[in-house]
Image 1 (cartoon, rainbow, N blue to C red):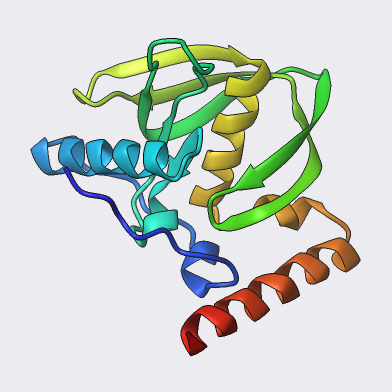
Image 2: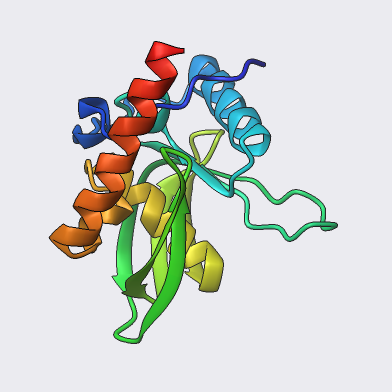
Length: 172
């Protein structure tokens, strides 16, 4: 297993629409394990393939609370097949936009169809934090960042700060 480098916004690789995975093979399973290791080390509760420079439709999530056993979910080609009319507003952050948070409105409950790490079709109903996390990570697969839900002013402030941070890191 290996830690993967996380891409920080603004970066054009985060705006790419990802392609479906044809086959869940050992290479995909190894990649998802590396994604989980990277997510836990960051630390975070979700990670998408484009955040580590890969253009396949793969996400991982684990919303277990501190002190609970890990409950990783690995999703290949996830798709929302149903969402509730009820919306929730919650503060979101992103490993690609460290130290930036904002309230985002999303459906409170979703049903997601995906292939698991064994290539088996699965469908889960998610609510609360898992629903928000999965939707956030699935947005990445479409080239959408949580700041894209914000007003242009708020989005531009965050992205300007990220550009400044990138310049400072490159100069160091």
